Length: 97
Image 1 (cartoon, rainbow, N blue to C red):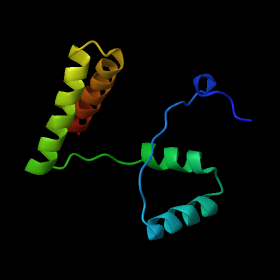
Image 2 (cartoon, rainbow, N blue to C red):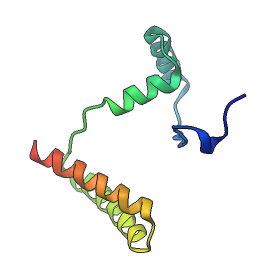
Image 3 (tube, rainbow, N blue to C red):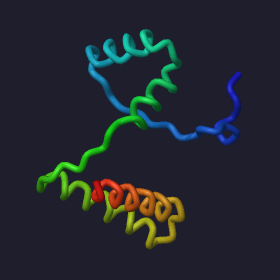
Image 4 (tube, helix red, strand yellow):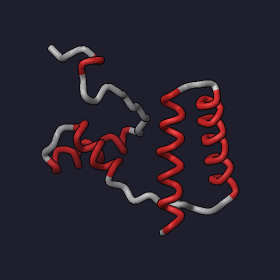
């Protein structure tokens, strides 16, 4: 039986939708990789190269997300403040490249 959520090292869940075709491709890649699904997803997501793409739509979306994070941090949400700090550091590193 799995341990309780609070006792887990990784206790956050991320969910997303895939089409049937996308799911088949991902599951085939997991089988070929020979690793557990969670390990495959983490490696795939965390190992991706991040690029800043200029454009009004993406810039506006980024601004909206940052504004929401800032609002939460200003309301005293400690996690949002930490998250905002991490995102800002990542953005600064990407801009230096």
